[in-house]
Length: 250
Image (cartoon, rainbow, N blue to C red; front, side):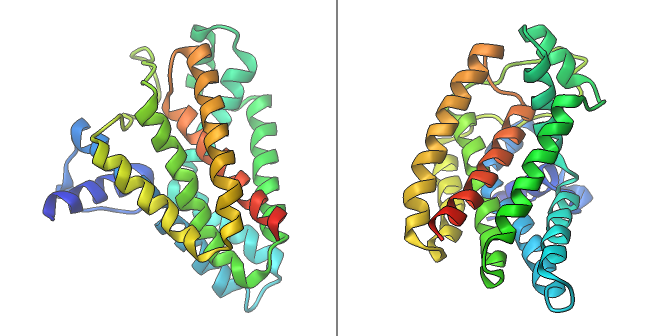
């Protein structure tokens, strides 16, 4: 039980800005095993957004409450995934070789592709959430954040890490652990969606698996595998797909 708590706290430490005990320590093996709790971190981040929305919706217009709930989730992760998405857009949009893609993604400055990508994906999230009944938004935030973090875990377990050079700005990244870690991640990723209409998972699950498969083939062809930026980009894309599918079936 203590080891599982340490794995969970490692996931919290790496995938969010939520403080953890200083005595926790770090190891690559523990980080690899902590990927089992990546979707569970989505429960926490989505829960933060849900609480912010629920509280503010009593006193502010629903649009403002949605926007501030989105900001709360971004602050809770330190824009971890949004940063990866912007770097992915810049690198794969402007790079034509593996080396050039890595060079662009390592640059701390954001380019045109990254700017347009961030505006587009955040705007789409906002418009999709705005189209849903306000009473459902808290649960949708939790389910969307959890489910979208499952697909990067799928990439970790079906692809391989494309190592960058020693000057990379990317943090250590979780890699494939045990098969039981994948099973736990699947359970945490799918559980919140059980409280939403069954038609949602009938549409979003196969669609997300298809997108993940095509995304995997694309990044393997371009750079030989995945990086942290690629995983962040996939999380953002699947989160948007989740909201759009729910809007569509509604």
